[in-house]
Amino acid sequence: MKSLLLVAFLVAGLLLVVAGALPLWVWFVLTAVTVFMRLLAGLDTPVEELTLTGEGLTRRLASPLRQHTVETVRWDALVRVEVRTRETGPQRRDPLFLLFGSDGTGVAVPGPLAERHGLVALLRQRLPGWREQALADALATAQRSTFTLWEKGAS
Figure 1 (cartoon, rainbow, N blue to C red):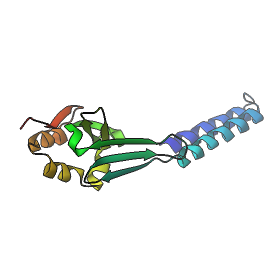
Figure 2 (tube, helix red, strand yellow):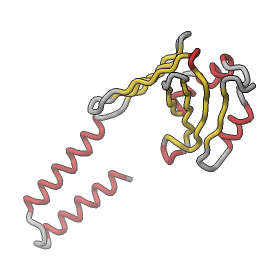
Figure 3 (cartoon, rainbow, N blue to C red):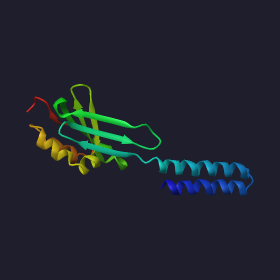
Figure 4 (cartoon, helix red, strand yellow):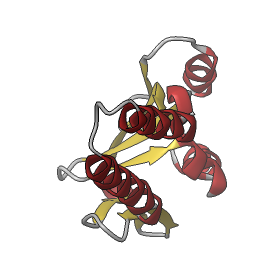
């Protein structure tokens, strides 16, 4: 869809040049800037890594043109796990898992990344009192909501 709009924009500009309403050099500059911005956006593809160890969880988000972000939470510091529905992905259909640490640390894990690494299965295994029904309700909802899946000390 974006490419179709880009082509329509460039064709409309060319029609303005033909009609004499826009100087040709302006159209060339606008075309060059537009194409450059599209190419630049394609080069800035973010890379997400999720590392699950015996000590905790680390998520790294990096891209060639932006700063790198590292989020970490230790298992022994984990105090709460939530899921926000309809938060990420195309048309905001994917969940976002939020893991909160007692020391102010935390990790936000998009649903597809969590699925690739088996995060939910690991959390079920590691966290006594995991609320499976809350996860099922969260994944079934059609609205943006937040569900608590686990809290330390609440069984």
